[in-house]
Amino acid sequence: MTQEQQVGAELRERIASQFGRSLHIRTLDTGSCAACEQEIRLLTAPHYDLHRLGFFFTPAPRHADLLLVTGPMIRAFDVAARKTFDAMPGPKIVVATGACALGGVYPADAFVHGSVGEILPVDVWIPGCPPSPLALLQGLLLAVGRLAEKTASLTFVADTTTGEVPG
Amino acid sequence: MPSWFMRGLRRGVVTTHYPARPEPSAADLPTPPAFRAQYLDRNLADQICGVCPSRALRREGDVLIFDVGACTACGRCREAAPEAVTTSGEFELATTTRAHLVKRIPLLREARP
Image 1 (cartoon, one colour):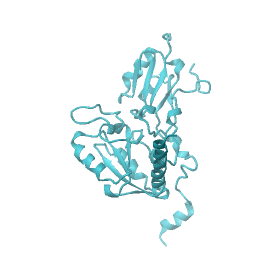
Image 2 (cartoon, chains in turn green, brown):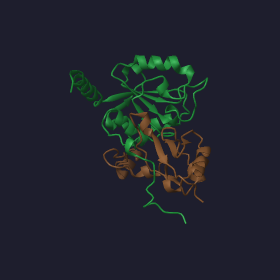
Image 3 (cartoon, chains in turn blue, yellow):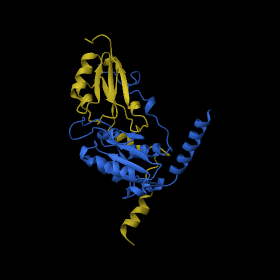
Image 4 (cartoon, rainbow over the protein chains, first blue to last red):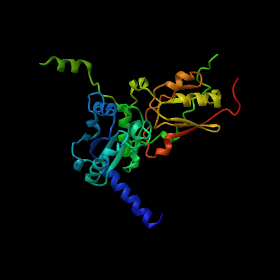
């Protein structure tokens, strides 16, 4: 391991230990239909109870560690999105939420960028339309390194030996 | 004593144990499709690409490209080809690499009768 790699590993560990404590989330709606917001709101309901895991929502980007972005990133929101991101203290995490934010529903045109990744450096992508509160929980825990990622190992090819075969 | 307090005591803890334990209600969630590769030929692949409203499916030669990130789990491909498309049941799909969400599904080389 070279010296740079060692310094990088140490820095990564220090950053991870920072995010392992309580974490404050700022949500950013860049033109979503509010279905994602509905699911994010449900995270604070008794059944999911986000606060038990040390996550809190904050209205101020200056108090936030994690930016939870929904919507297809409309062009009218460029300045506001950049200002929100710049106002957050580092180290910071950006999480793109929902099929719109991942570049699924709206193609890039004169009104939308089509994907959050076009404007902000996204760290975690959460698919779903809308992603269920459980999917959001998994994404948030993945963002702070408390759950492992399993997407890469999924093939989405059904195992036909166990599935029923139509006649 | 408010009645909701007694009701809360009667019902016990309602908060999910996820992620320490699996959540039973996760089985009811709409999830992206999974494909049965031995039923999928080029014609059927073109058919389900045509009904996808969110550009999650496209075909490149003998490979069906499925962008899980773009999928809205609407179920139209499953309706169009019920024998070849089923539900995956996967909801823990968050990833740090966008490319991990793009899946390549091999198609049959010759058309099915």
